[in-house]
Image (tube, rainbow, N blue to C red; front, side):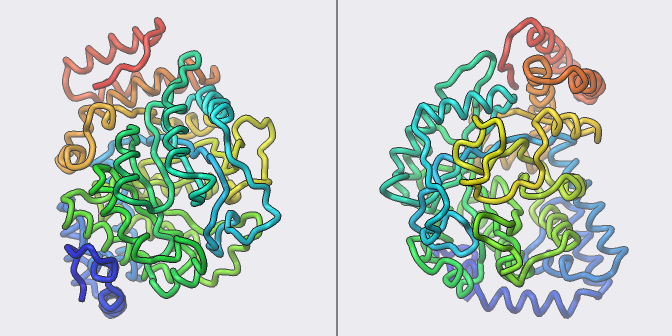
Length: 471
């Protein structure tokens, strides 16, 4: 029985409800009257149910699909303006006890080099990331209670936050590690993490168990209910995601939105972020082995429908995707991207990109400076801002500001000030020139004269060597 308020995985991600939803969507995919009604509701910016959004995803009418795309871009602008938040993943360890068939870190892979960073190596990686200009990291580690216990993760977080190198500082550490206990989530909260991210991989229980044949991750309910334990442990910013290509995408899409509805129904706070990764080639993984792979066109449609259905969420696209796909996604609602990522353990300190411990192929291999300039050429503001989390604007406080569109009053000026830091400390002369013009233009879009004046004063101070201003 479908029940978004239940804490039991099979109630809030209910298989029968998803099948009924897909049937309803199929029946109404070309029903203009139903589709128009859903689009009108979406324009109210309050979001859509999994069933309504599934109709839009199934829709085959080109002009209606186009309407969804335009609406997705508009909604992103309404909630997040023209800012794009930038981050990088940091791989701590690829030791893993799970048998996930789509990941090269799986336990049975005996020829991949296993590596775990020491605290000295963590420090070297962080300095390399700071020297590029990064301020926000997402740390990743395989599940291995012996090699990667929670104490190791906590020690790494402490090390990351402690490093001041030149003008560099990592101001926010998001954490992407395996499902764990309420007790451990409390420890992560106390360590000052930003968002806790956990990808479901697939919401289809039978497929899930086949794709995770061995190891603790095999337990579907424990994994799917992790976000509730994280919330219970005091982490109020959580990030969802599925690995598109493992299961039928329409099924995954409905499940993902049901999970968002569940978090909203139980905790009053939906997902802080939703990621849209696709299965990619890796050490001993061939994406063609999964017969549910999706085309770029469908991938883009999924992103637009997520944005329309969950207007308040931050949407993330990583360097798994190439420049062309990422470019299209920016126009369909994505608000966060990674830049200059290396998906190998210890990859940032190497001059050449190492492939021996990579979790997946990186399609977009440009430098952070390239990515920043590319965003600005499209009129986006690359943002290195971490202010909300450091000012306590998380969970329901963040959502209240975001849903009322008040968040722009802080985020827009903060984005300009953190971009100015990047331009002063790390940018190439060409990127700096483009950035200075963009900042000058964007200052005029600050609504309040008083804030405008403060931003101008602070930008001057940043030029003189001061750092880390925030609203």
